[in-house]
Length: 226
Image 1 (cartoon, helix red, strand yellow):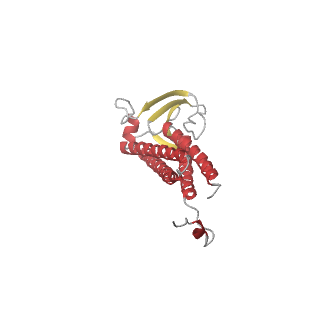
Image 2 (cartoon, rainbow, N blue to C red):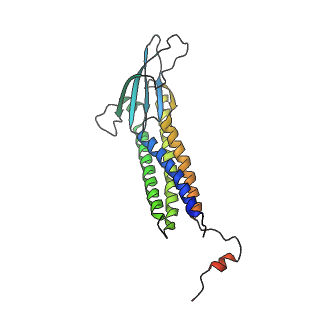
Image 3 (tube, rainbow, N blue to C red):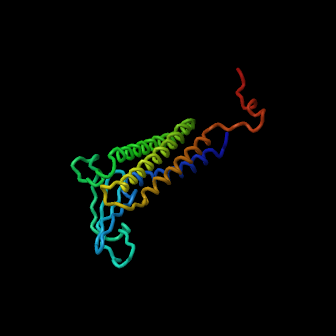
């Protein structure tokens, strides 16, 4: 028996917990993408926006540099009037017409649903790992590793769906947004994919039985016949 296996499992699980924390941060926050509109001449304010899986937030920013040849709306961290509303297809009655018109509703719903699957897989995998810490339950590490791998794949698919959603929003002629950039929630989702996918594979390799180093080792470890 590999005496270092419990230590390897705990170290891998610690990294996985970091990935799960990043996953939760990405799912519940609304800083996946930041949108900037076209700017008119002699304007003193602009309305930037940022959104996530569930809601869209707009912010009216007072521009400071009015004499510059090239101006942009932002950064979003500048002070201004802030207003957030959940997407209309999640909360009927809320007003988010800008998002509804410029982006297909199916993209937003798909990204959110796939992210929820990712969270579910991560939770189930964590339950399996915690149960495996009890004696003679190491067999739960294999399904746990697969759940973590599936969680990583789901969140990266959600990232790609969101990326396509942003591109369609910018390319639409019915929107005022002309520039976009991805923000820290998007980075958290990408980082969680790397940690969950890689550590899921690592946990699977740790859970697999050790191959014999010598040809006679298997025969020596075999149980005697009664």
